[in-house]
Image (cartoon, rainbow, N blue to C red; front, side, top):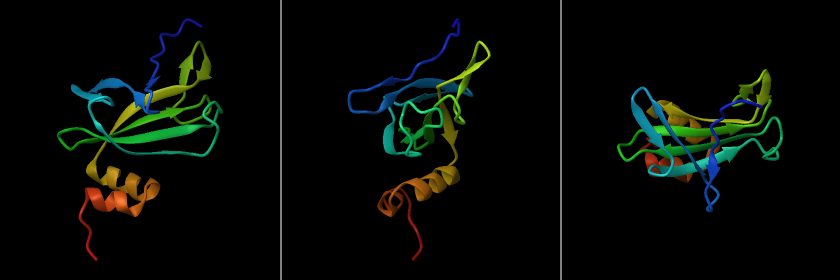
Length: 117
């Protein structure tokens, strides 16, 4: 393969490390705070595996680190073949709220945002 693939490296604590500039803004998993993570329950080497980790930048902006197998939403193309891929996706506050509500315990949501009873 001759692809120039970006590889996300796993930190010792089990988290990924990745930097990406999107619209002239830096998203860095090393300097942001991890809020929580979720996967689809498949083996990490599986073609349909999906992993997402929500981060919050110091300024309050949210983003997802995303990784997936060769048949997942996050795959990349290399020499005409699908391969494992990873990316960073900025999220609006509303999208971050929805992600947390869907994937993390209610206590995490309540720690981040006020809710009406």
